[in-house]
Image 1 (cartoon, protein in one colour):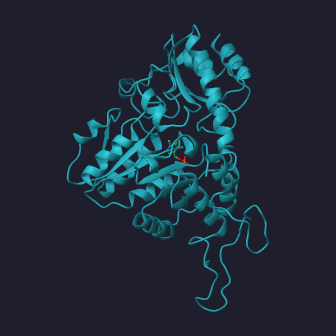
Image 2 (cartoon, protein in one colour):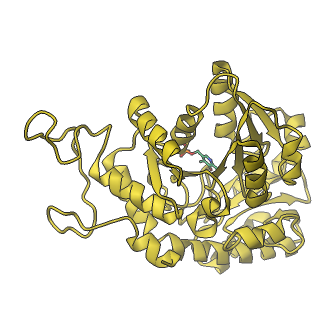
Image 3 (cartoon, protein in one colour):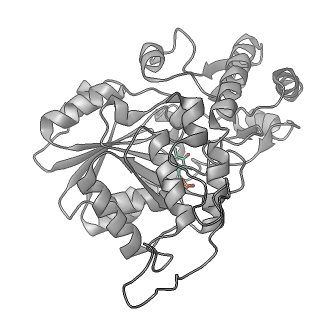
Length: 379
Ligand SMILES: *Cc1c(COP(=O)(O)O)cnc(C)c1O
């Protein structure tokens, strides 16, 4: 099945009790049993909920996976994934990763004995240097936030296989339309469905998808045992969002391309980070592992100061200054004072996050209007 058909039909069925084509919101905490232990597959809503079941099936299908496990947020999904490991286990992660994931690893899981290394994975060979007999997981995020660096998933999978470690990919930035890590050899794919999958900035959600039954069974166990489950209304919104993912992503990509080229030509702009430029160091890998270059990009100003960036951020009218990404509306953010403010300035700059760096989540509005908005803000 091609993506467009899959996102609309795969994994979901009309409601068996009524024929409702859209999965109803089963707003119930429990399910009546005919007698003790005699039920229709549903007992208690933390354990299972029919709206969630359909969503999990749809998300699994979207990533060409067998099993989908849903959580109340992206971080709840990653938190649960960490519970697959035990004290002393080592995890190698990309250094350019979502701040909340970094915080979860360093400030929560390190205290429980997991050991993390944050390294540059722009060359997958680099991972081998950090492997030890205790390495259990390689954690990859690509494209990265906010510098849009690209990591070769297939090459990481080859390293993981050689050492018996698992490979997990945070696929939030690409979405299941642009990239399917399981097809490239990953064992697990994680999404903050809050972003492109939901697509309308109205829900917080996370999921993990895998083809490995043993991992899936453990994750279903942890989902119920730890309880970070999504509510049925949220599951409904995500089922709805998923149906238009391909149409939205096509427009995100078209607009992203136009804005990237517009900024690159702009006299006030210094560097533009977007993986669709032929001279981007990850371009060749992005071209083969992705199905488009997406709507996320960042840029630096010639006037490389906090003040200049702040001026641009407070002058846009269509681009709203906000955290998050992946919604239909365009957002603008300033990593140095927003998402990455907790990182000391020297460390931030050493990682390429200069003072004037501005991040855009390009929405699906009219591209000419978006360009005009940026133009007037830059002036
Ligand atoms: C937002 C985000 C997360 C965290 O997801 P929440 O739904 O906010 O908990 C993880 N990874 C990436 C890349 C994100 O953008």
